[in-house]
Image (cartoon, rainbow, N blue to C red; front, top):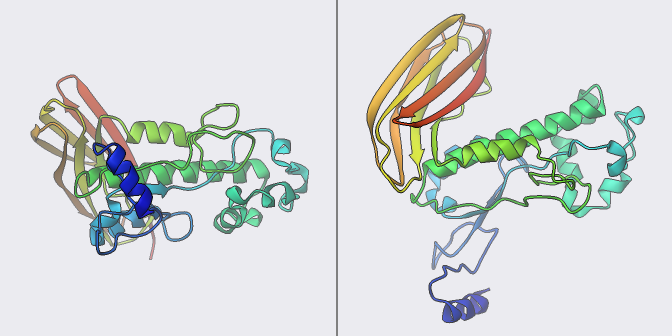
Length: 288
């Protein structure tokens, strides 16, 4: 609401205020919006956010909502669910809560594809953690270009429910809590997310970057990358200075998969004086 924005600016001109949220930037003032980018929840994959921000960088100016919902690791009876009736429990307790977005969750995680309620619920928590980790990394890499920050759906729940929270109603952390904590560390080393599956003979391609939010220069920094593929470990290394409050492109990893099949893991390690950071990404090469 523009009238509320004007009132806030008159009261305290030091505070940045926007008039719209949940919309994409548009004329006449493209900076006057905070977006809701729900890749990996309402549609698409979590890593689609990376390409979207490349094509529409202004949409990342401030992201007011992103991520996915998950089922808390609590007694299912608190959610009105009976594990013995899986895969068709009584969903009525949850359908009455519009914030749970149960239809979206069931579309992403069809109950018939999971052997029991516990496995299904665990899959939702793992998905939430991975979505938040990948997307926070993507936004932080674009700091000030023009990404200025983001907001999470909610930190914790007030009662047992399905939501985008990081802590359940008993303040017990979901896996997403650790994922967000790590992704928001002062210094991180990141890469473009690997595709979930690579076709045999395809070329693996990813760019590596360092994000440092510290007020002091990180100084001379070394990045080591180890790619485990087909029982072989390939290594890359880079050195260079990383300044204060910066996002630095380090280098590119490009490697043909050849006849390899099976799992791939990329491990990144950063070292700079007393500062260390690490990260991992995984994929699978499938036969033709």
